[in-house]
Amino acid sequence: MKDVIVIGGGVIGMCSAYYLAREGHRVTVLDTSDMSKGCSFGNAGLIVPSHIIPLAQPGMIAQGVRWMFNPQSPFYVKPRFDRELFSWGWQFYRNSTRKHVERAMPALKDLSLLSKELYRDLARQNNSFFYDEKGLLMLYRTEKTGEEERHVAEEAKKLGLEVDFLSAEEVGKLETGMDTDVLGGIHYKSDAHLYPNKFMKFIRDEILKEGVILKGNTAVKDFLIKENTIRTVITDKGDFNADAFVLASGAWSAHMAKRLGLRLPLLPGKGYSFTLKNAEKRPLHPAILCEGKVSVTPMGEDLRFGGTMEITHTRDGRINTNRLRGIIDTIRSFYPGFEIKLPDKKDIWYGFRPCTSSGLPVISGTEKIPNLVIATGHAMMGVSLAPATGKLVSEMISGKKTSVRTEMFGINT
Figure 1 (cartoon, helix red, strand yellow):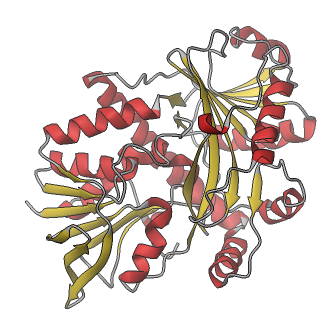
Figure 2: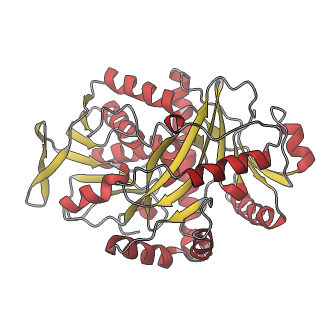
Figure 3: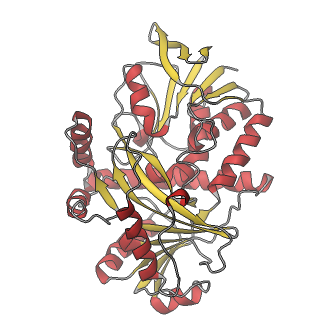
């Protein structure tokens, strides 16, 4: 049994605390916020074994450059003279190869399927977070996008995922909750969804039952390191000693890693979402509206839309209404009978997704600091991969064989 400090109270940190506590460790979670908001709360809530292609992939740089000149595009790199941005961009470019994608696909699939299995287990305890396995529809309106999506779906089938290729008519027969204007779709039957806000309440309640100590509004200032081992975390609320440490600070993880003398190639990607409460009309199936990269998730009686990826910095608190208009226009084009308008600013959520230059999460120990495990960089898939990540973190700290192979999720991958 070890004393473990988890730095970060988002979904990755909370799931790490849960599985560590279940393993018998004494766990404390530190977070600068009160743990009632953050990227985990505004997530699309999709559990996606279908997402086997990392963000760093062939053609992504060229597409990103084209999108930079469209203020409503789904992907945007905010230009600035910044050494960190140039370094991240160069590494992202070097990782955007076919070889990288081929190595990443089975690793992402295995991690996602483990997460789904763990979500099933949690939902059997208490499905207060509306976990449901209706799959995911990838809907498209142009032949070019359809060809790209069919290619990815064929790769998913080769890896053993269950996939249906649908015509526009077949999409209409499956999605009876709302009329769609599409050319076709891909139905990933392996996927699932949940209500992230409710899952965060569920996992918080569970870790408190396990005796985990939560220290909100506690900012980490520094670390005391002796003989390449972290001994103490220094915060504005006092010092905390432990045997092992987990860095799960999301988009802020790179700055935290610097204080430990570690280089973590990670930048924040700002995303937006908004939720229609008690939506009278809503799709029955979660979907990605492919041309606009907009997610659509029914969550109980509510309906959440999310989208855009702005590579920026964590000080960027401005709501870019052009990005929101792009989301709204996409929704209108795919669901022509759905009356929707730009939400008020107070109803718009935004958060910073931690994006690595490899497009893969980091779930790894470090040679430099043996009693540290890093768990971050999940980009849009934080909720999707959280239970599996937490399980792996627990196994690493407990000295056990990991449930899936983790070579692709190293700090220098």
